[in-house]
Length: 88
Image (tube, rainbow, N blue to C red; front, side, top):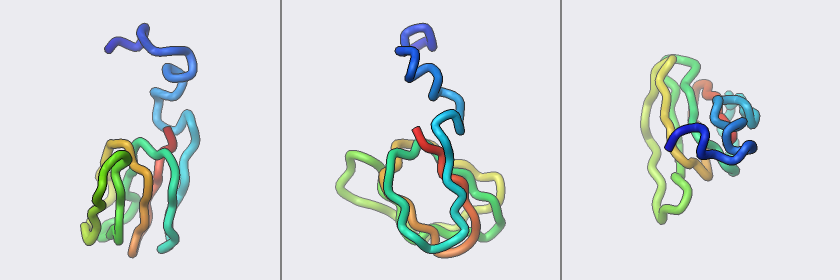
């Protein structure tokens, strides 16, 4: 779908960070409508992450600085390191 087919609000939120972001450097549980996350430190790990509209979650994964994950994320919890969650 081309950008011309989006509503104005949707088109404005296509750029990452346009709807805001959350810096994560703790083990708190974050819930919301997130569209991506970026790892900000080598050896960062995720305790649990849930993709929206799914029955399961995954965790126990290790990420390195600069790595990205895109998707419709409804819940995120880090166990170590630093991440940026992008709202969508």
